[in-house]
Image (cartoon, rainbow, N blue to C red; front, side, top):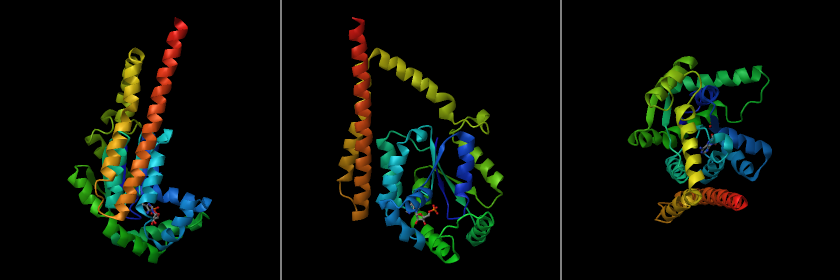
Length: 296
Ligand code: AMP
């Protein structure tokens, strides 16, 4: 299951994402968390992002697209993921579409948590007070001034995504002002209605793909590749085609420089995935040939 949680800062995306992680055994991919980790580790990305984040502005699209592309390729994301805080702009959403296409992955749903803006400031103040009580370090961007800027950014740059995903029939809107467990139940119901999770398994922690389709698909693929190694190699080489497609699209006439560099990142990522797949396919075939020869 692959979903996006959309909502302004303080809408409860992080809380709901963690609950979904526990329930369905998928991973939470939060660009905010990844960037904070990069800042703490002092990596080149972290050094670039530090000031931008402290001021409440958005980190350049190509930076976050690159981070997400690499993260999606990690083994723990294979079973599914929740994107929290990404995408945040229309170019990021377009880049994500291309990335998923190149990686042959499907987005199940975009869940928008709709909240009353005047309540957000209060929520963030409460969160900060609780963190201080627990002796935890408080985020530099959790101040009323920076929050006002982050909210303004959300309205101007992220809210257009509501239209973007509703046009693509992916959007489900949920009242984020309800109690935490009520929001969780509403998300569950929505995921069931969309067929992303098994109705009878909801609450037991199984996504539709994990419960049903994955083992069947695995068995079918194993049977096929055992019979026709050449076909398996061909299949593994297929992502190279989509990388080619993505690269063609990338040079088709980008609207502006930012878009161009995002597309470049996507192209690079697609090529990387394709290369990996080809290598894997070739290895598999070589193994089979050696086995056959040994038998003879
Ligand atoms: P968050 O934890 O999601 O509120 O993100 C904290 C900060 O990280 C944001 O205010 C941005 O500066 C940066 N950030 C996180 N995700 C993104 C993104 N998708 N695009 C650009 N900047 C981001």
